[in-house]
Image (tube, rainbow over all chains, first blue to last red; front, top):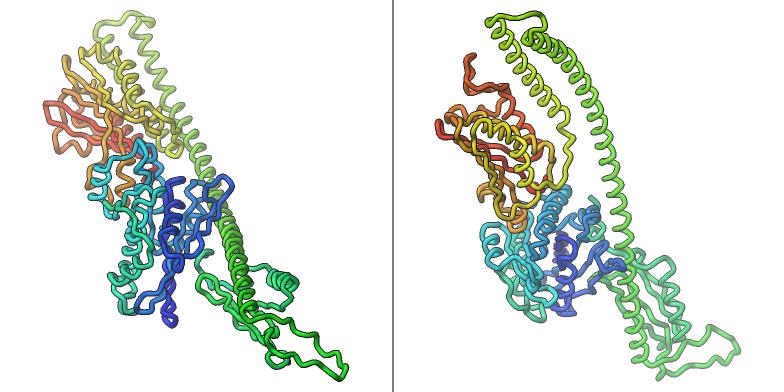
Length: 224
Length: 410
């Protein structure tokens, strides 16, 4: 997080994490489509020719609340391939919140778990703890065959700590819910630690209302 | 750690290569015949002396909400203004280009949009190069650390290997050699090679042979333990079919349990995945548990080796990341259950201690060194698993081994 009290400006960094090809970039592409062009910068993808993210994607969003707060959200993805762990660690540095994009296919269960362990370790190496980091989980690719059942996801979600969302990112389903869920969780956490609400004169509810007003279309439901 | 993506305010120099803006402005001037400049934030430009009514157009150069400088178009002479001609023959400065204000405004907007794309491309290249450099530095740091750890580990393994070889060589020579001689001579005596023995002498020699064999097996177990300590770091991991392994162990021990009149069965549950572990260590674990069960089960009893898959109980799972970790957090369980003499509740915590025997008396009924279960515990822990026992005195015991399907997932 970066704060400029003189300019009433706040920059929040959100990172989309997860195994390779789980749909992190697709999430950002969909958000880019949802957000009003006035608030949304260009989606920057640093990729290779084979279409898999080499470094990261960056989507800058910005808007001004009714109370004059200039909020900038910087949405990043990390490269999912195991070999790019150094890049993932760099992108994670100073992250304020993490959306973990998991692949719902049963065959990807172990890759999801390994990537989460990798997230925990990379946060630790950045001096951050997964226990205190705002994290939401998205089970993506719900339209594919051989995926974990809704009932099982509901059961896991009920037992775990993180909010869990279901999504079909290629169709935009569940993408906004994940994004808004993460943003709200992150704001709440930052507000709790830095008292942003009173410093900027904006409540969590007013903040989220301001944010949703800048979204052009509301996506179809996907929350647990 | 340096954050190359968020950490700083950008400047024009970060986004456009040196001389790049000058080139763009020159090309624009050549095309449209009017001067343009980009003035970085914080810099001022000197105002030249201009004819009356000469005009400029300016626009902010901003990127990602930050003002980085000012775009200046002009000077030009608005085309509706009157131009005074010099009558003195003095050449003076070259005449300013003439254009309408709306045209100048359109040109300015066009150049601003071109600049926006240039800045975005520049930012992309800037981030890519910074990330490349940071990643390379990070990788280098990682490689150096891993290299150092590997070198230290290699030195430690070499040292352990040397110590182990020395120790095992000494023990083997100093203990086994005389014992083999003792057993050999006892054998020769028993076979009458040194003359016929009377009944009592045969019984005494038999005792020497029996106790000698016991001592030899004790030495072998101690050597096994020593090898385990020395080779703790040398786990040879491969994909192991645990069901097939258990069936193999039971079949190999068939002569022993059939001789004792026992019924030994193997039950393999549905969907048991292959486990990434050390085949030989796991085989030794199952073999020791089976030997133990056979030893303490009276004739006519049964021993069952059951293989199944289980997930850790909820209280063992951390709620953080549970939705992702729990489905992958599977364990394979091997349960060896017998209908033997059982172990009293108060003795159960100690059965895995080295040299511990529930019946420690000199006249105990069951032989053994008291090292079998201790070896099981050390072996299974070296594989990231655990062993436990549940038992009812007089009814039987069940030893359970739990092994993670994937080593080091936690």
